[in-house]
Length: 152
View 1 (cartoon, rainbow, N blue to C red):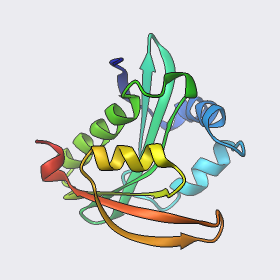
View 2 (view 1 turned 60 degrees about the horizontal axis):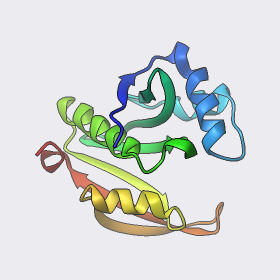
View 3 (view 1 turned 180 degrees about the horizontal axis):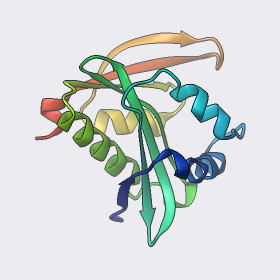
């Protein structure tokens, strides 16, 4: 498995994330989409995974509520999947969140995103709920993990 270089990026590097996002997801988005999502959020964390200086994945999270850090978005370029890049990003984010006083990490994923469901289960997240996402006409599965366990 590939060992990615994981770094925290700043707002000036956001176009890098937008470009990678548009290689992974549809429909394409722009900087404004991300800036709107970050408004009013506390402790926004944007991490970038690179292999041989090539951006291959990203993870974005923020404080959901005191003591809970939320993974909003995780993406890995199709050419670099199944190389543990997503796992490395999630573990790095959880490490950061734990070192910043958060007790839990939470994420939601659409039921049809089986690779994300599998990653959450592999990383020993607990399924804590579901809700219907009418925008996507799919079930969202909610996962949570105590960060004390994430650092073991």
